[in-house]
Image (cartoon, rainbow, N blue to C red; front, side, top):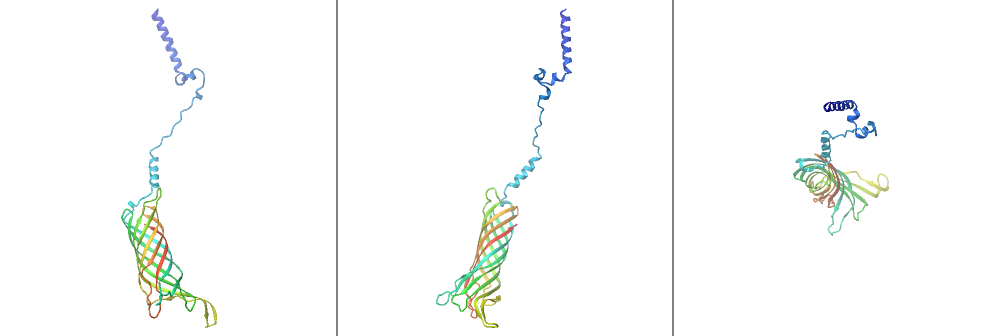
Length: 287
């Protein structure tokens, strides 16, 4: 009888299990649903969390490489620079007569533009040596002291010059591509055009019609008593901004002082004795 009772209880328990296996709430629902305290709709659905893929890493690395400032270590050996320098020119009057009195005084300046092509060679790190060619026009205005007429004479002296430079460049500023540069050297010039022009004030004219007024003469070439060679000292300071690996923008200022006086004291023309001076704004690109 005991065996029959055990067999009956086993069949009842197995039947109960089979009946509940067809009910999804029994297998998949939490205890609070089985207890009748809620529905399956109240249970939050799982949310997929996106994971970063490997495709985004190369783009981020490329962006980081673009943001990093470049250095001069991989710029190469030769660098070609093209510059245009607007200049302000004046004459340093040192002319005196036999008694030691000055005959002329400086009364104004001339403006010009100097195109220049430079080839720089990077010897090591940020130390450069350069040589090039330029077309430079010097000049200025003077007037005679105690002269018979009230007038100003404007001189113009044009040279083809060979500039030689030594340049030192600092490291780039923090988180930027800009740096400072300092340059010094000399220009050897060969004269190609010397001229002057006079402007008289309140000049009394007799022919063809008597009158009094201002008068400007035509441009006069100086063909005699001129010194064709010129040697000048040059100093520069400015900012170098690196756009690309081999492309730089340069902005700075420079000063020139001419050691050789452009005119001789000839017998036919008592030319004044002076030196040329010049200051300019350097604007250029370097490859």
